Length: 208
View 1: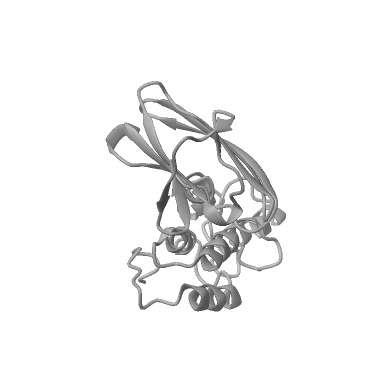
View 2: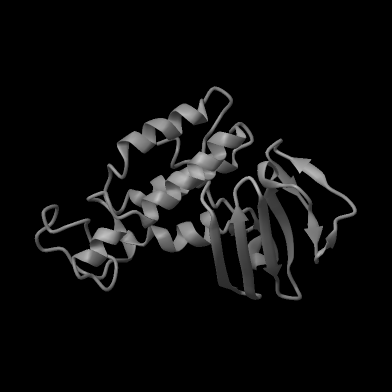
């Protein structure tokens, strides 16, 4: 429950939590999967989470959303012939399940607000927080998120241990606070130019 409510503290060993949850896998319903996935991203953003545990939490969230091996997965929904998210993971759980259920759409939010890390920092997205959590795999991804003030477009190219590139385009009437992972940082460029100033946030992320 504390994972879903984003109530982390210094007494929580994030690495052990991620290890335990990795072993358990998606041991919950499609409805609870939203809290599970978003809770992992919340754990990764916590100031009390180590760099390695933060990356592992993001990777686990990505694996849960994209994996095909587990019985409880969105990939298995596709393999069952679904063209939209199902009411349950499979008919064995609910024989009369519907094949169009919005409460099973955790990846839609997880990709936008967790994986790409775009969230509203103030009402109507007047200010935006951007904190991608792409895990420990080589990733190239992009997303355009509609907001009340226009489209926020982000693109990430991550090569763990080598480079992390984030491109961000905002509406003219929007400002953003951007966090990039310190562990992947070799040289920081803003608008393709060396950044004149940096501030370290959460001892894990660089804020600019």
